[in-house]
Image 1 (cartoon, rainbow, N blue to C red):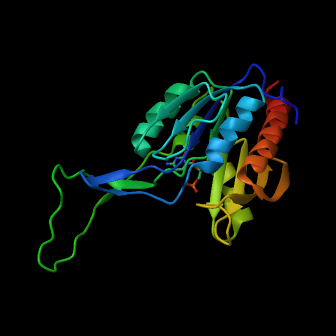
Image 2 (cartoon, rainbow, N blue to C red):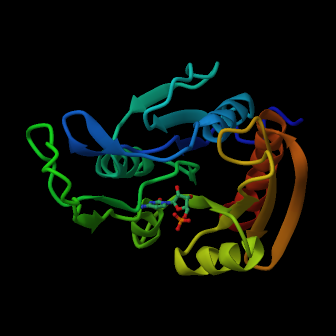
Length: 222
Ligand code: C5P
């Protein structure tokens, strides 16, 4: 593995879930463990990049060689942290499972039950971090993830276009792969090409992904 593939480049990686608070003790979250993103951050550092890792609430140690780590909780916090870090970055890998919605208001006190009546929670849409980066005139090389349960290829290619990404890494969730799993399998797509990275550990896949990102980055940016 070429350990110089990203030498001199600044890479920002987001990882993990986001938690959207409902009240002081409850939140809406998701099953992302952060392992794929942390593995990508580690692999990018091993490839010589200066890496900033923006992490949602996870219980993972900062990988060796990662220069900066910014811990965030909500999608709004991740949005602010990523935009600030990405302003100086060459490459952004959005591996975080950003919550699409948050409660419109956070209750200041713990919500109480009301004798059998249901509860309706009003949700507001979160900003799309990748889409807001790609809307900027000057922005880093953008890599997104697409975790899907079905029709992986068509959803991924659609997302590549719609969000204005340079590359998308698609994986099927379920079958011992994806969320909360040690293994994964990825299909990478970019404008005019694709490659299949078969089932492997997230560490191994992260190295292969970083190698592909370095190749595509050099093809379009250098
Ligand atoms: O549309 P979907 O959420 O499936 O897209 C997944 C990709 O988009 C991931 O790379 C994720 O980090 C990114 N994303 C984002 N901001 C959001 C939602 C998703 O950057 N609000």
